[in-house]
Image 1 (cartoon, rainbow, N blue to C red):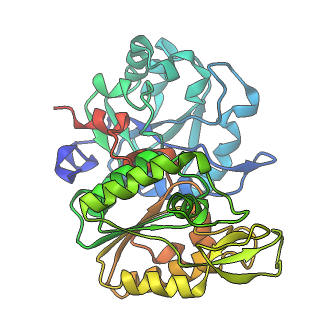
Image 2 (image 1 turned 180 degrees about the vertical axis):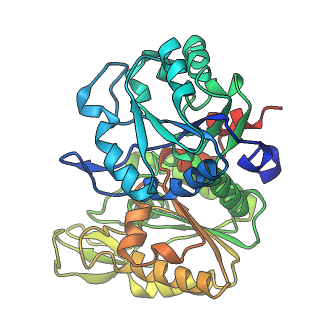
Length: 400
């Protein structure tokens, strides 16, 4: 997807304009405290830019799944202090209905001021993408800015519907995300390698089918690798394996051959008889795992073989861990691969893009998070993009 297909903040005179900013503040919390400020911190660039340009900023976001009901447990009120602290600006809060009162409130916001609108999913019209609700939302703004790539796979009123009523633009974070993703699978520097891990291929069939047509190497790890090995006749012992997905795995293998994509499966696994912290383990050929053992990681030897194979690649796309990284030492395989990709990225040898699901946690655990070219905080949206799907929230920004 080219950067030229959508408008950005730089395309508008924002002075005095009411800017409806769709953000994703659906952040992790424990006992009403935010436990990870990543999404908040990454929005600061857009907030600062809008305020410096004299925009009146009104933020739309969801939190949890209140299913169209007013639910105090899912109110955004708990976020005000952390937003003010991380963004270093006062944030007003609007809790009223969406309609004339909200429109009146939007006019009361001063240039350079920020206001947060209560959880947008408290309204039934949001998830239904109700045209009247989208129009009511639009009455609060002069320009719509979407900076929530992680919610862009949803065709909701605040992500898609509103864009049909207002001049629209991508926020700085959305622009950065789309630029990075385009450099990974849209118009990448070749050769391209994709690393796909995780427990199941059933949840990533679309991803795998799309990747084998786009990349030169597809590296599989985790339970997903076991299913592919089993499909080719390997004995995977007691390892996590979707034995009912053999036909799908074989179809992907055949599709990869036709597309000139080489699928790399680990030749050796770290196996245990029972999974626990620091459990006794040994390296086992991946095609002959005894019935009383299970694969929980790829071995150092397998890592070295993979790294040698992809050493001349220019672009790396990563989704999912290669082992049970939450339980040490079965994070070693993921760590070794992640750290090497990070090192090569820092040397200018790789463009590396990662995201989705447990990927961010796994790379953080490896100490490699800050050394990749780009880390997407999106889960479902990142996976749907990897599937080659059109994301409604992005498509809405592409209108003439």
